[in-house]
Image 1: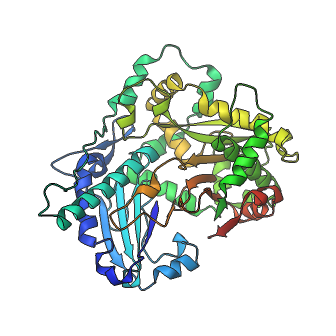
Image 2: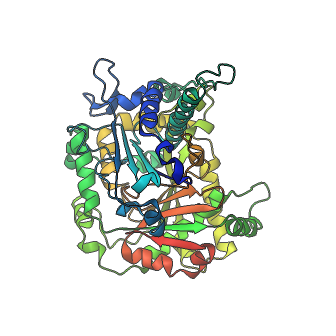
Length: 479
């Protein structure tokens, strides 16, 4: 994530986001998140894990640099991170070593960029998804910010003992025994169709990938991504427009169901992206590097699936009965998908079309997943080649899929290091695959920001989609 902070008082530039304060607070917060100083390793069965060795920590990359650009220059280009003069190589969700990490994968990478005359600061933080999910990520960022505010207050009121701010004691849990323990609660095996939806057919290439070191596996994923022609666009959606749409679609819902904003927005995105993929110029995909590799795995580009898959990431903490899950900072996400029939997608996007598809998303997000989570983990632990296949090529036979992730309820705009809340928070557009990231916007602005990644032709189609653009009040195309 990139957190942008604007210095609103140029007379106090030296006191704005002080470098030593942020640095010291980071390493103090790291004491509560030791897993961020662990080593990525694989066991004898090719399963990846994080090894925290107190005698040989793998400390995060942490840099604090200055550039000649003014913060206002970034405002003019819409905070486009692809134009930021900073080395972001290897510092995103795909586990690859950065140029500053001596060939090692770092679970956490921090880049702080100060703009001319300290007019603003970008705090760029990347934590591997295999270490934590968005829930744990935001907790760490707010922990770091809280420690910074505490340290700053200690310095300013060193003699005022009675009014000193107390640093809150948090119970952060990183032990994988919590999610792993859920497997002991499984009662029945998953159905054959469900197992088939999780597992791919093993072959020599997927087994070879699984046997690689974490560094080499990440390098392959990064190479695959470089072969994809993609573009990023940020769409701002006002709260009142999406709420009006939700209320309108709600009239067609079952009596005992109340659709959420996430249900409606995810559904609409699924429809728009599916339509865009159909409208994109034919034949371009067949010439791509990714398509050639897909053919190697027996997937044909001329297949016409009956459905378009929409995958949502589900936070399991609210779906399992365990007292410690709210304090668990590791990754407790599962991705589950549902199919949108192309017969519906091809129709005019009316409330009557949206309602049954929103119902599918609602059911997917609401149903209990504890047993599925347990069995899925068991299957993947015993089939590391399948997990490697999924990471590199995606799910078997899913030619069309949109991956969605919703951060709109996370406290990104509460990450205040003592100099004020961020002006804007954006996910860094460096993720593999076709995806939509739903982010909160600055509370003063309200609404939602959708980061969408597609091919250029597909993005052209989205921008030409009148129904979608009527929901949007502004957009920025960044690459």
